[in-house]
Length: 192
Image (tube, rainbow, N blue to C red; front, side, top):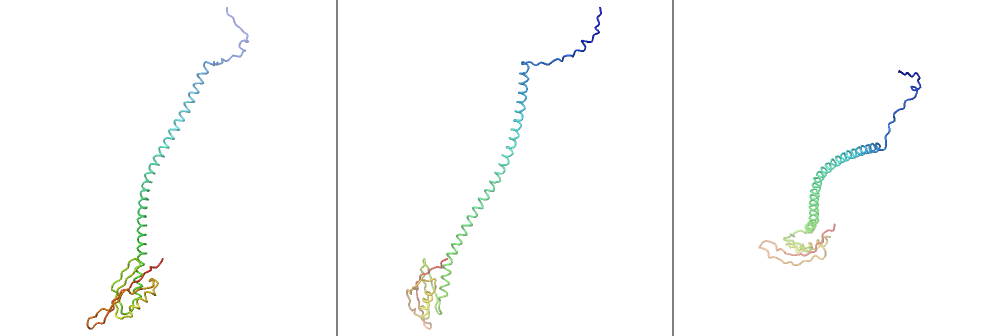
């Protein structure tokens, strides 16, 4: 027998969807999978950033080493220039000392030559510290006293200028007699 249901009642019922039901036993592995994938992504990003930072630091170290080499050469040049500067400074100081010490004898000779009267000439002059001993000859007896007076009037000689000795030298026939003299004076160099 064939049955035919002509009623559409059953057809009008809404169809129930199948519900995917995930029970607790399935939720735990899914959550662990998400955590594992998230952790893997975070660790991958962290590894990538550390690699990038390591490469940047390696570049900085290389640049710093190159700068160190360059600065060492500059330091060597600076030290060489400082040594040369020290040598030049030492030379300049020595030249200044010599120039300062040179002014005394220059003034001494200048003042003695200005003080020389007519008919008097010098044969020797020595200086020890500030003491000057002058030896010479004169054709006129007053020339020696004029020479002493001129030295005493100079600002470079302290008073008194002493005549240590004088004697008349015997002359050869036909020549005038000469007076041999020795004078001692204290020279005071100019103050700068």
